[in-house]
Image (cartoon, rainbow, N blue to C red; front, side):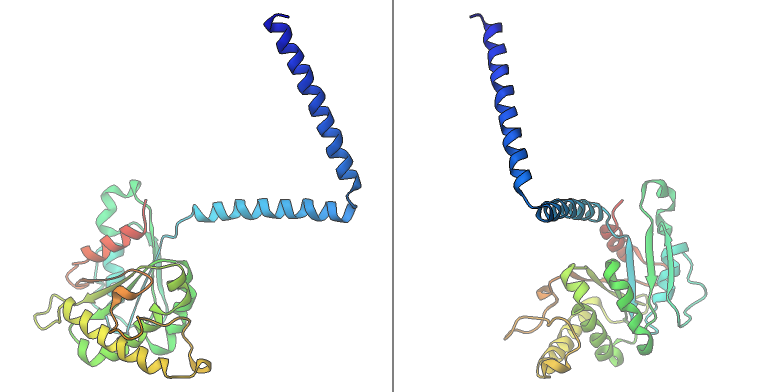
Length: 266
């Protein structure tokens, strides 16, 4: 028997074997009650659809950056500087979110190569902060704006607000990066980012101790911060927390632009 004949015999044997397997499979299927068969097919289809949706949404990276912070910290001026390079003649307290999708003003010359940023300026008034919960789940990053000029009188209030963001379920679970942006640093009497960083860490350390003493039923935050027995540091957070400086009025916003572009990639 030459090679060609041997190959044909092997093919014929394989066909016979496959026919036997198909017959056995058909017999098994016939023995399965219809309900179980339908359930099995349904589970298979549902699993396939879930895998497809998971891959689809994993491939879609958020382009949303949320500006947050106390009222008067300069968020709205920063919003306009990032959008069109204008301070819009100083600050106006926002009662509704400022929202827009655009390429950053400094990047306009190469806008065709860059992904637009969806920027949301959330009002800092205490009665309006609940709106922040609507935007955090979709955020690729959070910019928490601090008034570096008038920092000390507002240190505790700013730290409490930041504490609530850092213990938010979406921020922790998705490890959403947070930038503490020290604004108004063009002024001679403005505090440095190093000083603001240290003071907010100390204030949050006090907050986590006092809040941990409250009964579980009274705690509104989803997670706690820090390591038991150690002084709090932003390095202990589940997500990355960094500190930078800016001046909305003078247009010095390069560090916040860098943070945005790092988290909204083209």
